[in-house]
Length: 326
Image (cartoon, rainbow, N blue to C red; front, side, top):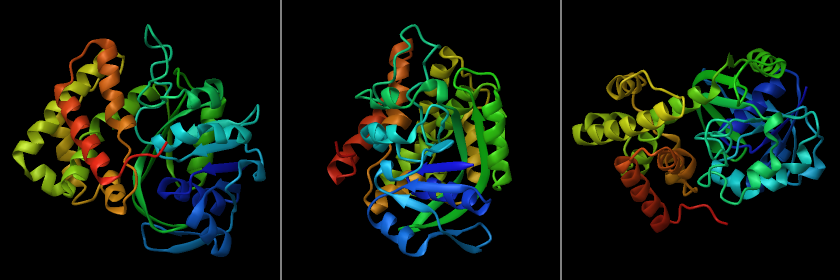
């Protein structure tokens, strides 16, 4: 299959390397040092067992230089997609399946599930995403794994293999089955979902507090969970997100305490947002926290703890220059 990866960061690099290793024709949209590194020596993946592999793929910073793919995997940060979505237009043919493999709430999340139904301003403020990525060609995805960039064009897989795929409006389709089979053959643990919105909201509920708290404090997960006051604050914010979810057809059946106990079992780790903060990269705030607040406002659920967390991490990002550039 012809596959294009938009964004060769941690997740995009893992997808590209796995799919290239499985024999697919992989191209990627990349920039700067990553583009130069992959062109000169290939894309480097270090897997969970510390095995190192190098993959030669076609890379370019101009989408017109890449072939039109059958599958376009978008692995950009949410703020980067909001700013650069129009550039992806040349990569989307009439039969291209679009798979955003991203954190947070997607722009289409309330489509067909809300009286308004419009795109989320916190996720797609200029409307570029909705104008470029046709919903009828787009799938929903939830990525449950960790990996990080060790150098330009070099990715290290941390833990996890699970990817949930589903139609934005529900049900199972042949294209969902095809993408699930493709990813499983490449070594992922992909599964189909008839309610991918619920899976998206559940992941958001689980990580929308740990990520910003870690970026604010510089603390790893174990230290955060060991602090009773911080843990209580996060539980309160999670209760608000659960109340919002109940209003939009995405109920949460797990308690905040049990969810945090699951996180503790993963050991001490740094969140993706903390990695970004330490590297001086723009933080993924709006799709994780801003969207939860916006949806809460739409459905009439007060979110004072989410609001406070959003205000604090947004102010920290501004003061440290960790905001996306227009």
